[in-house]
Image: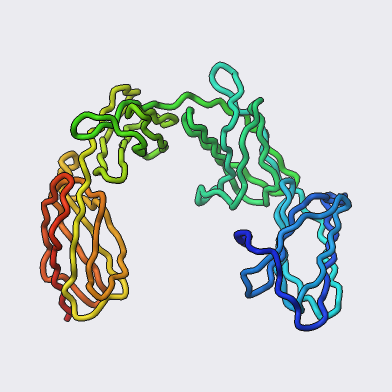
Length: 363
C-alpha cells in the first residue's frame, strides 16, 4: 500500500493542450459511498489534489493536463484502494471502484473496576514485524468502545496504549476473508508511576525538563512543572531507566528503578560545550563523531552522543549540552583514520578549548 503524500498546494499546473476529465463513481458493498476522500497525484510531480465524493458517491475532476495519474481512495470502513489512470487530451476517464469492506476488530476497554477507559489508542499491528500499518489506529470513546475497520486479509495483532495504564498487545488474529470480524474486550491495569523533582546543582527547581522512562516492555514521557515536580505513568513493573534533560543542562540517567517511587531526585549540572577541529587534507563529505565516557553504573565505556557533521572549510565541530565528565572522541571519515583517540575532561558549564584531531589516509 503506498504511503499517502503530505498535503501540498492543490492547484495542478495548467495544461498545454485541451484538458481531460476524470469521472469517479465510488461504491461500498454496492451502495454509493459519499464523503470518501480521494487523492489524485500527477505521476512524477509533487503536486496533488485531495477532495471527497458527493453524497451519491460520484465526483468530477476537470481541467487535467494529459498525463498519468495515481489514484488513492480511503474510507474508514474499507480497504484502501490505489490505482493509476492515463488522461488524454479532451477525453474523460471513468474510475469506477466498489470498495472492499475489509475485516474488523471491535470491543470495549475497561479498567479492573469495570469502568470504561476513554482515549485509549488502539493500533493494528502486523503479526510478523509488530509494526502498525499506515494510519490504522483509533481512540476509544467515552464508553470505552472502539473499532478498527477496513483490515486487509493477513495476520495481525492489536496494541492498546493509554498514558495511565500498562501497555497491552493481543496478537494472533488471522483475517482470511474481508468479512472476518473479531470482538476483543480488554481490561487494562494501572501502570507503574515514577514521580519526584528536577533541580539544578544549587537545589533550585528546573521547570520544563523532559523526563523519559524506558524498559524492555514499555515507555513513557513527562515534563517537570514550575516547582520541578514530575510524574511519568503507564509503564510495566519491569526495572526502568529514567532520564531527565533540558537545554543548558547535562542529561542525567537513573537506571533500574522499580516499584512506584515518589521521591526520585534529579540534580542536573550545567551543560558544557565541546569544541573540536579536524586536521585533514580535504574537507570530508560526511563525518561521524562519537563522544563516549565511562559509566559507573555499567562499569564500562558507553557512547554518550553521536552526530554526523557536514564540516565547513575550517573543519570545526561542536557538541552542546554535554554533561560534565571525561570523554573519548572517536572520528569516522571514509578513507581516513584518526592518529589518536583524544580524551577531554569537561567541567560543569565549561566551553572547552578546541580539540585538534589529526586524520591520516588509510593504507
